[in-house]
Length: 474
Image 1: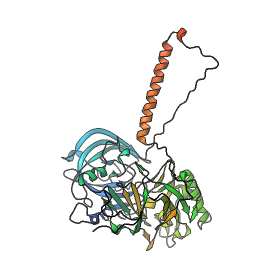
Image 2 (image 1 turned 135 degrees about the vertical axis):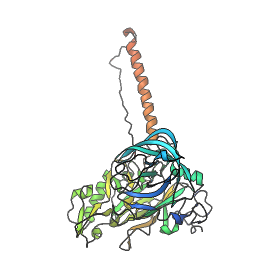
Image 3 (image 1 turned 90 degrees about the vertical axis):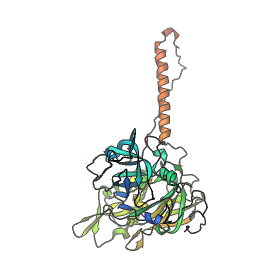
Image 4 (image 1 turned 120 degrees about the vertical axis):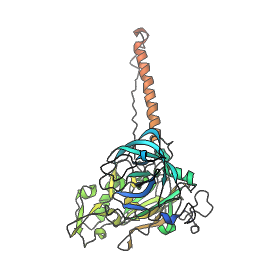
């Protein structure tokens, strides 16, 4: 069965579109999307994970789904915070590549060894596939107390892969070996539920296309600006229907990405301050501790009282595929005022699901739990549709509306200068080479007899300029 016919940028492409076609379930073939429904477990506080069988004989591990990195890595030695790990010595199909790899995240890092092995997915594509796997030997603030996953599945582009972009990513390997369309989609079903609950809230990772039962209404697409993270262009934010009135470049400083591995909605510092002020101004609460906004304190109410009616709706405007139009995705307070802790018999405590960021706007689980998100790599776009599991007390907690004109917004809200990590390395090596040449010249000049040296006059000017290169990682 094919997806329903398309019309405009909001819908899935018509049948026959090269590489962008996504078939609905075909129980007899490789792509059985219904088998992938509810193949995830987890929550927004500790991430959503997929069960995977690795090696021969298979070793079962839970793998965190992360669209903000590109390495597939699993615990390779015992760790106090993981209940299982992959032992390559027990797998007859494991092959070490002997390459050390280190990946750093906005929080945490790990170091391991790169190898290959076969994987199967009990609730994924049928068949076995040979994949690059990093076995984690050392880590810092990566595996955290209470997490129920044992590795990470990086689904971003190979530009972020370590130790270099030549390492084929997990999804690229599936596209090549299983010959599936270059598209996957993600639904995370933790809306309104405790962010550190039983870990069984559920969700779906659909590899190779789109499952119609996982969304309602239209799919709205925004272009991928650059293929490293899933970088998109945000035009404006509204709190309670009121525009923050910031320059649109503030929302994209220095990038705006869609990242399932980040639990919160993270905003550049200037944007975060504006959002907090707007929420505090429009909420029905007279005074609020600053610790609640910064994440250091919880706010507690009587369990019989639902605080969500006290807070405004938050809307994010994204540029449509038709650049003269935009659409907005909106989340209700049930998604960003998150239940986290029960005290005694009467109190339910909540956290603020938004935080500040120094280097990106990150659409993380706080927002993604409201939507079915399509990562259409074949047509370089990210799609959003309302998720039927994004409900609290029987009412939807997310909305999509459009189209809107972009006449009041700059034609480009993303900086034209992009400091990708590979570019930074090239610049670093070039600067080091230049410094080496200058140093060599200085040494030669020092060794030349004084009579051959140039005698500087008052008119001579010497400029000493230095350049700083910033190293960025997720």
